[in-house]
Length: 116
Length: 111
Image 1 (tube, rainbow over the protein chains, first blue to last red):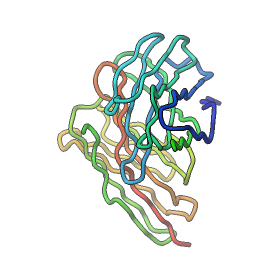
Image 2 (cartoon, chains in turn brown, yellow):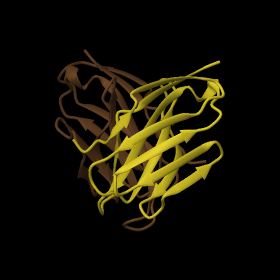
Image 3 (cartoon, each protein chain N blue to C red):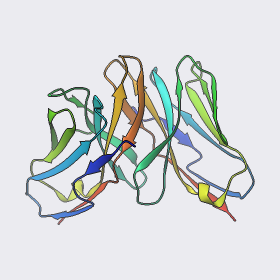
Image 4 (cartoon, chains in turn red, orange):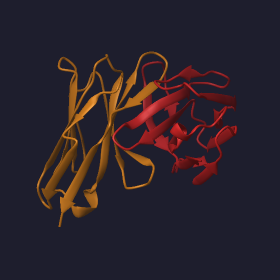
């Protein structure tokens, strides 16, 4: 079974801290994604990556950065955490079979981040 | 926003009834997918339909895609209480794997 593992289930950080959220997948997937989920807003794409060292902005990249130094790991970085970044963060990965043939995404269990 | 729209936002039905959920989108797609999320957990993939397909079945699930109307529907037949969850449609767009989700539909199936 595909496994997508997020490093923390719950996290509490202080305003202004630099926060790292880690995600690891074990299926050699090319694509990896970071979303945040807020009530009434669904899942919003922050950043995604289709290859090592490649990254693309999603719909809400402001205040975030990402790192993909190895194929299996995709990190989300909050450079200076703010209270409006309190949210559920979901990581996902998927196999890229060709430019037009992406497959289903597999999700981690999520990290509930609270910024105080 | 590039998010699509799902409707209804919430749906409550009796066990045994069918549930129909709809998704509309704005840009051209490579494929459209439906996911399910149980409360407080990660999403689980249900079914994927490619842009050149019109209908797909998987067990009690039936998904249709109308690219001319930029819309899709998910039908769950003979619903069960265990189908209670949030359902999301998601679209792969463009040449670079972008995968965007809608706001989701909350389905409640009453025993």
